[in-house]
Length: 379
Image (cartoon, rainbow, N blue to C red; front, side):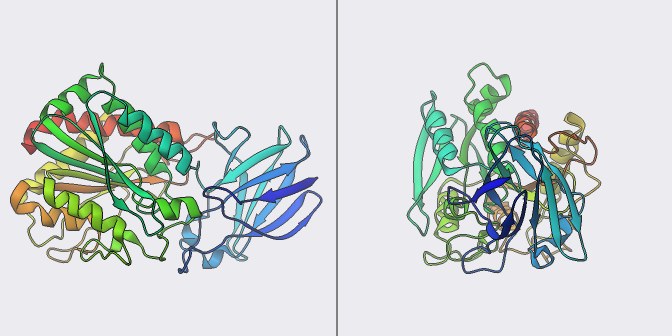
């Protein structure tokens, strides 16, 4: 029997419509001041050993309805190891049905393995205490949370890594955890080389307000931060404004903006081909990075992805395009959007965990290794 369903905690999001015995009907709250919704995260208390059936309804109107077919919800008994629960989607009714037999009296369900603000602070504290790392607060979110930046390296090549503009894309901060573990490991040869040749700026979470509130895509004001890079303002998007201002002071030769994609079951990158200042050298470096990453890890592929913008037609409100254009002449900047799946990875499926925090972290390691291989090209 189900005893309680709760989402009154960091990044929680669910509404109980109806609950009886071992069955519950649920819906998802919209982001504040927005129509976006897709992220869910809740705690279930129920009798162990007895199957529960959870129906999340109204998903036809969710942000990305195409993300639900072939998707399986994440579930954890200890909030450490996340596996996939038996799930099915009825397209006609817009209902995701989750079936699970709790091993203990309490378990958690989420759209993807959550990355709490508490864990974020642990990540920042641990990285900031490592030798050679400088912490800087770039500014504050609309709700007053700090915009954390970790800086390291003695070199002249400015590298920016930033994640989670869309707060429900928690895989982005799991990737960041892998990146920071690698960069602060004094025995890691790729990290040693990158710290020698680069000055690296890491922003693990671009949207702390949305993260804490359980949003999918927006900040406190209901603003999609990845459409603000052309003209960020203190009243709508101070998160982007403070990061972009910091970039203007340091310059940028290489950047990765880390995201998750609801529908495409693969890891891929999107570039900046349509920017007005596109050069062949930028294009060569971008494609070389993509191809080297594909050769390095079978978790990455180049077949599936987003359409390429025509020449001169790039959306400069998006960070990858804005950053590449903004620093094209001064640094020949190569920028990219890294996308990871909410679903399982089509090429290397894992029936138990699907795409997982562990694989996100490993991908971060591979991304840095490829950058180390190419680092002299960005000098």
